[in-house]
Amino acid sequence: MFYCSILYVVNFTGYDGFYGLAINHACLKMDLYCRALEEAFKADAEEVCGRVIGVIKEQCRMFQVTALTFGI
Image 1 (tube, one colour):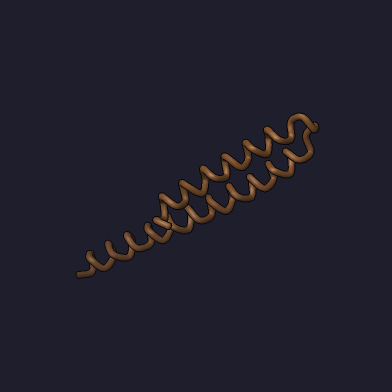
Image 2 (cartoon, helix red, strand yellow):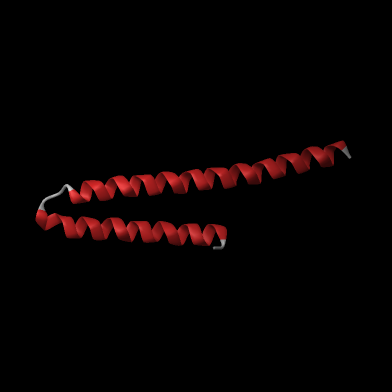
């Protein structure tokens, strides 16, 4: 019985640890995209549109991965 309870605690902690890690990773990626967008607006006038489009595409890709991971 003790073995089963330890196994249950380890499995539950592993799932919570993964969930916390995934949320932290998503928040970090969003922060990086915000910084990339700021850098895109600082670029030359000809490059701004292309850089902003690139940042938006990457951000949409990240939202799709998050939706697939958490079933949103």
